[in-house]
Length: 536
Image (cartoon, rainbow, N blue to C red):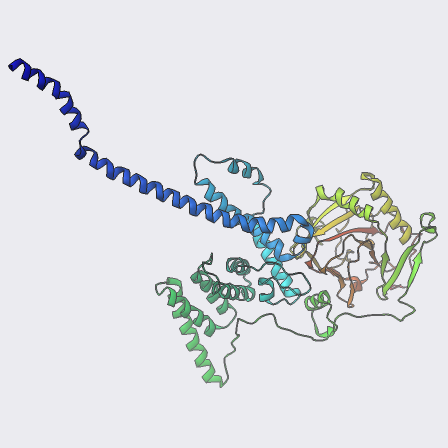
């Protein structure tokens, strides 16, 4: 009997041990562990879903604008706001997407693929450059800030409006250039936009911080104080705002004291005005104002000079065999200096060939330093250019021959055909094509003398802006595709004609393609003989 009881206990021991191992009390802690793991999993899924939803929203927007852009890239980029937004998207939107995706491990094929474009996408400098181009257009064409930010620029097609953060970027670009006038306009516009955005990408405090300082720099201390007070309502511990308020208070006390001493109101500017209108006569404007007025086509600036019999249209062949059966339509549009249009001087095929040859060679356009003769970049010439030799293609050689036939001047000493494309706000401020007497090193390396004449081909129509203007006389020539503008830079005596000072106006809408031929003195001795009269 005892043996049977001992045997039974021995048999039950493994069972008791197993029950102990699987006891509820032992698994109770595991329940909590699993619950925590489930919560972590749910949190991860929720975070991933939010991330995906955010990426979906960004993708929806990018799909829409990309589809619009790819249908007609040249037309899309012809609008300056579209060009700015494209550059901005590369630096901000796509960077944000990449940051989101890089959070995941293992890294996806997207990261590997996108890295191949790193050297091709716009940089932060490009964003600032595009913003400054918009400011240049705003000044030249007197565009209201609201019109640009809402995508309703007069004379162009409507485009998508700018967000508060995009207005802020433009204002910050102006601020970095110490351009506080435009900084105020765009920071103010950013703040207005923030009132209508649920979750603006930029904080109100940041915008007000910039706005307060730029307003003060515009000379309106009282308005700067008001902006600072508004900032302190949002953050009463903001150190710079507290410091500025103390400084502005002291400045206002000084102004009040000055007012009391002089019995006059202090000279304060509102600092928040938009671009002021004006319609003064041409003679009272400085060159910058004349240039901008001509670019706009203001009635007080654009002049028509010459009698009806002097401004006329006719056919030109110069007895050149190549033109006898196909003379060039010629229009004299200004008498002094003589400015000429050669209409339909290029064909569509020739335009496309020249553009295709130039595209791989396009680089930032340069100017020649008048003192050293060295080529260098300049902010007053914003475009890309390429140079084409006659031997590169039959079309280039044909065009060179046509220039020689229609002008009667030899191309043997002329410069290569320069092809230029103007982008956002692309322009070339007032300048002379010829070298003045004090510029002794100009064209020294060419050894072909001065630039006697300029022929400028227009290879595209431009929806708005982009005129060629002559600031000394009030002449204006609009880009007409397939046509060319021609003028002499030098008198027959070899002296420079100061009335040929001209400029390429900023492109407001469209893509401006031109090519030009600078014709030099040497070799023209019998084609354009010297004169005894200094100004003939």
